[in-house]
Image 1 (cartoon, helix red, strand yellow):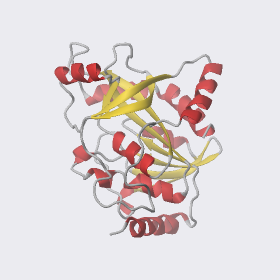
Image 2 (tube, one colour):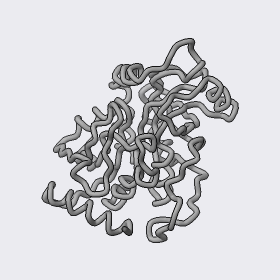
Image 3 (spheres, one colour):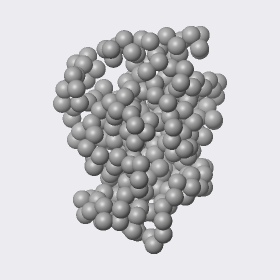
Length: 274
């Protein structure tokens, strides 16, 4: 089925449920343990993914599975309260459908968040790192197959995965508050197992600072359809082999909960500065 037809079918359900066609300026994808931010939206309306044609079901822990509309910092927004992953058994091209749907609603910029493991020995759990580049170690690409030239080019440029002007505005706001924004390279792995110590050593040699199981396909799709991008990783744990202990998803959730206030403050500024 052509993408344009899928988008119309999804929009029809949203319009029927809301009673109007939403026109958000910013889109947000809220990762593991970070979906609570959508609960702070004014005039909040949440729609289950299961009720929207062509949306997948979110099965990962800490992903509520709602598309949420509302206002945030006075800006009309739409947020994914939980995302889709290839490790859930989905084709990677289907996991990025919401990016194109949010673009069709008129968003100008996409804020991507995730929980990530720390590779760089200078980061620590609780740090918020802006993604300024990425390495695709899953070797999965959502653009494989026929290209719709009305959506984006066959060969999209990936020389910048962060909108630099947007970043500079946010960086200045953070500096005024006495905070410094860290940036880093995000390594995408397929999952669902955590990486091995040998893999982490290899990724560090390649220049990776963070590792996770999401976000990169969404960035590729966002670049394909010419969206401004601002990605933020919450370092919820140090990656395998950095510390002498096993990794658990509970640690991910606990750390995300601990940095709620800091994360919320940063995302509010990001949305304001779009």
